[in-house]
Structures are given as C-alpha cells and as structure tokens.
Image (cartoon, rainbow, N blue to C red; front, top):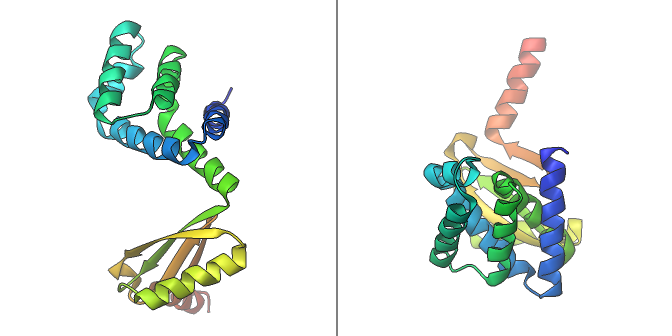
Length: 180
C-alpha cells in the first residue's frame, strides 16, 4: 500500500473518531502540535522509527511527549496505535490529510495571501469576503509579506496559485520578449 493511501486511511479513521467525540478541531490542533514536534526533533524521530528500539521504551517516550504537549486521551491512543503498527513515520502526512478532510467536513477553505507590503485590514477583509463569495466556504486567510514580489498580490488556495505580483508580470514580459 502506498504511503499516501496509508496516511489517508489513518486520517479518515481519526476524523471519524473526532466527529464521534465532537473533537474534530481539538484533534486537528493537537495533531498539528505533535507533528511539528516530531518534525523538529530529529532524535525523537530516529528513536520512534527505529525497528531495533524496544516498543515499550518508545511508548514511554511518546507518553512523556504527550504529557508535555498536553494531548487528549484520544490523540494519545491514536499515536500509540501508529507506534504499535509501525506507522509513526507517516505522522506528518496523516496530519496534512486530517486537516484537509476536517476542513472539507466543516466547509473551511484555507488560503494564503502574499503581498509585497502588508495590506490594510479593509483590503484583507475585502479579499476574504470575495473568496468566500466565490467558493461558498468559510475562508481562513493567512497573510504574509514577501518583498520579492515587488508589488501586487499572490493568492494560494485549493491547490491553485493566482499570481498578480509585479514580479510575475515582469517575468511574463521577459518571456514574451525572449520568444519574440
């Protein structure tokens, strides 16, 4: 079975459990925290993924991590299952699939807006409102500044990028000039 199929299967199972317990959003936040810690700590990752390190010691380490991150019982049990089944290496991918599935279920669209200078609050709200009207979903907009855009905006959502930056326009003009 492919890694993405495995990750999707576990993400769907956790989402079903989260929906049953009315913990979809808390599970998402907790899963995000533990996945970030797992990615950031190479030594932790090496120990938990090691086939030679005893399972009982891995479980004890994971239990300590769960206490430090204040994870719910449901997420602790889920992580224990991943560890027991040798699927802990898929944690980051499971977290990404879970977030996508949870957003679909709740009608949320996550969008990124990159701008050369920070847009005014009114501009950000207008863009958010336009995206909500266009998609029919509740939009969670993350705004970042990127001086390399030179000016204009770049929006990214639902796997698509809409680039209205000056950098992109200059690149298109240069490509046109090169082609003649």
